[in-house]
Structures are given as C-alpha cells and as structure tokens.
Amino acid sequence: MEFGLTKKQELFIELFEKFAQEEVKPIAAEVDEEEKFPEETVEKLQKYGFMGIPFPKEYGGAGATDLEYAICVETLSKYCATTGVIVSAHTSLCASPIYMFGTEEQKQKYLRPLIDGSKIGAFGLTEPNAGTDASGQQTFAVLDGNEYVLNGSKIFITNGGKADTYIIIAMTDKSKGTKGISAFIVEATTPGFSIGKKELKLGIRGSATTELIMKDCRVPKENLLGKEGEGFKIAMKTLDGGRIGIAAQALGIAQGAIDETITYVKERKQFGRPIAAFQNTQFQLADMQTKVDAARLLVYRAAWNKSQGLPYSKEAAMAKLFASETAMEVTTKAVQLFGGYGYTREYPVERMMRDAKITEIYEGTSEVQRMVVSAAMLK
Amino acid sequence: MNIVCLLKQVPDTTEIKINFETGTLIRDGVKSIMNPDDRAGLEEALKIKDVNNAKVTVITMGPPQAEIMLKEAIAMGADEAILVSDGRFAGADTWATSSTLAGVLEKVDYDIIIAGRQAIDGDTAQVGPQTAEKLKIPHVTYVEKIEEVHDDYLIVHRQFEDSYHLVKVETPCLLTTLTEMNKPRYMSTYGIVDAYDHDIIKWNLDDIVVDPSNIGLAGSPTKVRKTFTKEASKKADLFEGSPKEAAHLIVDELHKRNLV
Image (cartoon, each protein chain N blue to C red):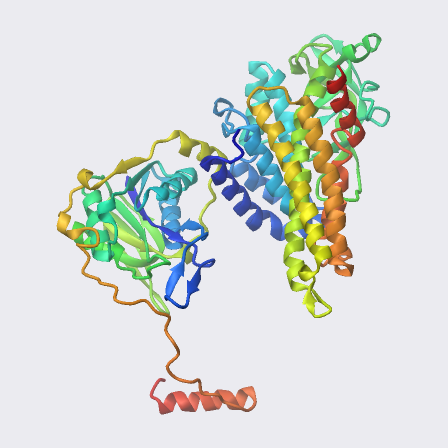
C-alpha cells in the first residue's frame, strides 16, 4: 500500500497552489461579494490546461488522471469555491460524459474545444419537479426528421449562461420511465435555447446558476449522446464522477478554513495569550484536521479508483458524503474560533461556511449519497 | 534558433533561517526553488520561442535532486534539459562552476545563452560573465529587456542605476537577466505530463570538455575561511525634531561627511 504522492503529482500541486495563491485568492472575496463570474481567471485556467486535466492528449487533454483533477479542484477551492465548481462542473458534468459516451465525431466536435479551453461546459438534469427524483423529467425531446425538438426547462444549472456546450437530459419515451430518458449535446447558440432566471445564492455566489429554457429547440439527430433511452444511465454515471469533483471542492473549502484558522489563532490574543495556547482551540483544531485528512483519503481513493478503471460509484458517494459534511462542520467551527470577527466579511471563514453548505446538496444530496452507499452494501 | 538557459536550484531564502552560533544557513526542511533571476531568463527564452522558431534547452549543474527543477522548466515549455551532475564537481566556486558550464556548452548548439544575473544563495553574479569569457563570446549583464531578436544580433536594455544602455550584441552571446523583467509563466498541466514523458539528459565529467584541474573544490581558487553574520559596527545617529527639521539635520550631516 502506498499513500505518498509521486514527484509528478507534487509538481502538479506546486502548480495548482501557486496559481491559486496568485490568481484565485486575491479576488475570491470580490467574486463572492459582487456575485461575479471570474471570466479572467477562467481564461487563465484554460490557458494553463486546467479545463481538461483527466483526458488523453489525443483530444487535447493534459493526459493526467482523475486524482490530479481532484487535487486541482481541492486546491482552487481552498481559496475560492466558486472557481473550484466552475472547473468541476465543466470537467465532470460536460466533458466527461462526452468522453465516456460520445461518438468519435462528437468528441472531435465538442470534447476537443471543451478540453483545449475554447468552450465552457455545463449539464442540465434538474427540473422544478425532478430533483433528487431525477426520473420525473418533464423536458421532452421528440424526433422530427433529422432533428430532435426539445421543450422544457432546467433549473439550478451551474455555469448556466456562461457555457457554450450543454448536456441536456430529456424524456424521449415517457412510457418507458427511466429507460425512456435520453441525453443530448446542445449548443448555447441553438435557436429556441435560452437562459432564464439567475439564482441569488447563499454561497458560491460567483458561480453562475441559472434556469435553461428550451422552446422548440431543434437539435441535430447526431447530437444524441449514447443511444436513445440511455440518458438516465449516462446522467447517473456522470454524477458518479461529478461527486469526486464536489467532494474535492468540499475538501478544499474545509482545508482552506483550517489554514485561515491556524494563522488567526496564533495572532488573536485573549487573557494575555494567543488563543492557540488554549486547549479548547488545540483540541478543536486536532478534530478538524483529523476529519479533513480522513475526507482527503476518501476523496483520493475514489479518484484513484476511477483513474485505475476500478468501480468508484460507492467510493465517490462516500467521499462526497463525508467531505461535504466535514466541510460544513469544519467551517462552522472555524467561524466559532474566529469569534465575532469570523462572522464578519473582514475574514474569509464566513464565506467558506456559506460555500460549504451547497456541497451537501448539489450533485446528489447527502441523503442520496447514503442511498447510493447503502444500496451498494445491500445488493 | 537555439537558446540555452543556465538554471540553478537554490534554497528558498524567503524561508531560510540562520544558525547564529555557526553562522551557517539552516537548510533542513527548506524548499528548493529555481533561482528567480534564472526563471526570468527562462521566461525570456520561452517568449522568444513563442514567436520564433526556437529550441530552448535548459542546463543545470547540481546534485541529482535538481532534476525536479528541470522537469519544472520543461513543464513551463522548455524543449530539452541537461543535468550535469558528478561528485567530482562538488565544492565548486564560481570559477570552477563556469569552467564546468563552459565545458558543457562546448558540446551544445547555442545562439543565445541566458543566465540569471545572480543566485539568491551566493549572490556573486560571476558565473554568467565568466562562462561567456571562457567560451570567448560577448555578453551583456543586467538585461532588463530584450528589445529585438535577429538571426545574427540582439538589441537589449542593460539596466543602470537611473537609466539603461541600449546594447546591440552579436550572436552567439550570453545575457544575464533580472527577476523584475517579467512575470514568468506557470507550468501547464499538459507540460507537467510532457516533462515526465521526457527523459532528462544526464552528463557527468566524462561527457564534457573541461580541464579537470579547473573543476570542483580543488579547481576553486576561492577558499571560504569563515562565514559569519555581520554585526553593525557603528551605532546609528538619531536625529530628533519634526520630520522637516530632521530632514535638514540629515542633509547637513551627509554634506558634512561629503556623502552628497
């Protein structure tokens, strides 16, 4: 058994850390405060190859693995969870299903630009009446000649309005239930495709979260991803991978909060001593880091399994469940250790606490993760 | 066009601590980094490569651990890397280092050699110019900008205290570069993968053209007798009064000592 990272992975960490400290950290508060999608950062992420880490070089990817990708999302999220989820949704929810299920033509046409960074990706599954119960899709796709005609709407779509390429899940045959669901690659410029309401959120406020509206949106037949009826399977498989990204985001948020807290408790004095000298602080920190390290091992295991072609559905669900709940707990404790200052926007821990909450909800709530894990245990 | 960058791996002196009893640097646990002036030089080489058909080769003389720095250089965009490592080079001062590097460069094609102005651990600024002298090629130190690149000459800015010199220099030549001249690019994710798919060329004494009496500790005319932290020899003069009065007092004192 080997727990150490390779020299190559250490070099990746050096890159991610340097980039995050210089390009992401300085604007993280502004991105949150102004609900600003960090366009300039995304351009730099594209330039340095952060948008296609786990894909092979033949499609323009970095040729690295899901582990390096997870470490990338973790490191970006240490400083800015918004930036972390932009990379995660793009990579796991859009590029990845095209890589896994796309035809060679689809890969050349859609995957390549997503990976080389000229396009941003997003994924549309959730609807007002189809959240955790993703089978209740009310977006319909009807074949008409050489085109599918899509009608319906999606909500809470990460990178909505900023993405050029969307994976849209829609019902093609309602009588078949989940086996009547299909997946489509939809370009943002397709007539009939539009962006609806932009959500105002508690956290990850710089991330664009919008409604997608499809009204007689005609998509070429060749943009069907996989076969008709495979949409639900594609969506579930996509979310299995996406959970590794969100788990990594949660892990980063939690570690970021601990790092901030360590600096603060050494400086903040009460009763004539730095609060780091009090055993309560010490024990809290020990508990926080222990949980975060445990989360890291789960996240890295899931990513490693995926990179090795091993089953990872249960492992990814466990990683997301534990990392997200740890992020919520650790950031809440961080705010408490900061006291009144922690509640203000003078310090980043309140933002981290707000950002942490979503990791327990999106790409499958904690309850869904428990369903996935227990189903795998009891089958 | 062939560009060669000379790189040195140094301890990150922003993190380094000094053992005041022995006067030596405590290197334990201190990260090694690419010397900042050298990194700026590499960035200049890569900028030339961005717009010209150039091959960038990076060379370092150092212990086997320096390989990671060469990987980093490839991950930034360098095409080839040579690690010159041999126990017989140990203890080299600037003379022995430049002799060794010149011996390496005798076997490498180059139009432009770029070295950092100086390394943050030794701060001598000697290795670049000495190497050029041994190769009998022109050199320009303290380059703060490369203005023009032509097949047979370059035009560069050489930094001076309050001005710069515009220098035209024929190639092949050697430049020494300054940290402040650019913001070096990051490695890229694909570059890191390339760096690990790419073998670093490893040379030892037997692979280069050098007089063995000019290398290593024995070939180093510099002998370090003692290392110590300099103590302030004179107490500071304190001037009292308002800032304006104090300024006058300081100016008077400087005139009195013929310093202005």
